[in-house]
Every structure is written in C-alpha cells, then in structure tokens.
Length: 99
Image (cartoon, rainbow, N blue to C red; front, side):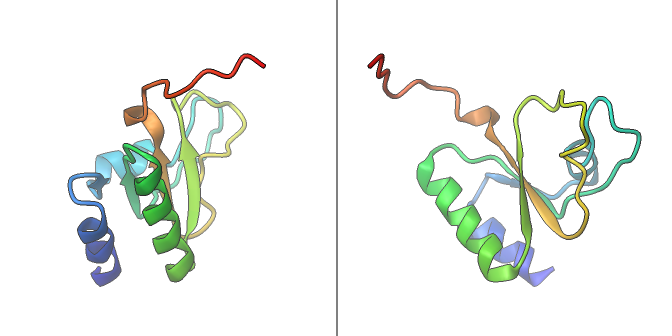
C-alpha cells in the first residue's frame, strides 16, 4: 500500500508490516477475538509519536497504544483500520517530579 510506504518513509526502521507482528498486536491475553492492524510502529521518542499520530490523523486511521500486550479487556482488537503504537522502545526515564 502506498500510504504504508509513506509511513515507512516517515519513520524508517520503526515500522513493521509483517503478518506475524500485525496479528500479535491485534489481540490481547483475555479477549477471544483477534484482529490485524495495518502496521506496528515502534516510536523511540516524542517526535516519532507525533509523526505517527499526524500520519494517522491525515489518513483517518485509528491508533491503538500497545504496552506489554497483557490486557484482558480486548482494547487491542482493531475494529477498523488501525495502527499499533508499541512503546517498548521508549524505555528511559527522562525526568522525575516528586512534587
């Protein structure tokens, strides 16, 4: 798909469109149904998230945030065209504000 190529170009090395990853990100641990997202985006910083969200907004595609994939309520199941934002590469603490 041409629009997915645009996403690959926008976020080189951070977009996976393999069938196995698309299926893995379209289900969770407790919900019996499964789906398949259009692509999985692995942002590594705020700018990557902003780019992915801008692309999704322009394309009219839903965005599903993905953490560990252990949810039980089915919120990872895409009901239409969607991308998954897998935050596993955003694994650093930048600031602590105890107040």
